[in-house]
Structure formats: structure tokens, C-alpha cells
Length: 123
Image (tube, one colour):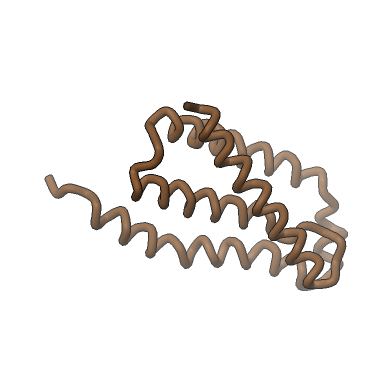
């Protein structure tokens, strides 16, 4: 059912938000640091894990794809109202908050590509 796809997306968002808050506390600032990036990484890993174990139906997968396609524009719109000048003037934290999740995604691309390439049937 589509609602399960939405539930998976919601779970990933909440865990990513919690990780971002924890990272912000660990760095000594009162902000969510990289929560969106963490949630997107978790969504990628979780859907891959579910696909591997055939525990996700095409309908659930459609729900995940639909909401994840909407998720990115919504997050971009939300981040556009933040104080970018204030974040950049605070030092390296803004750069780290952007580069750490992006770096993790870049590191995961070859790993995910190898996993999916091994499952494809040659034509």
C-alpha cells in the first residue's frame, strides 16, 4: 500500500532530523546540522535493503518514489528562508554541514552501483 511508502519516508525523515539535532549538539550549536542529508541517505539505504529482501511491493515503491520526488523541492523551499549569510559567517560549520552528507552520498554511489549491477540480467 502507498501509505507504507509514506511511513518509510516519514521514518527516515524523523531519524535524519534526530541525527542532525544530535550532530548540532555535539558541535555545540543550537541547530539541525545535515538532518536532511542523513534522512536522504537513510531512505536510499532502507529502500535498497527492502528491495534486496523483496519486502516492498511496487505500490509501496511508488509511494516512496512519489513522496521522495516531492521531498527535495519542499526541502529546498524550506532552506531558502534560512539565514544563509548568518550561517556562512558562523564559520566552518556551514561548510561541514553541506560537505559531510554530500561526501557520504558520493562514497555510497559506487557501493550501490556495484550492488545493482550484479543483479541486472545481461541482454
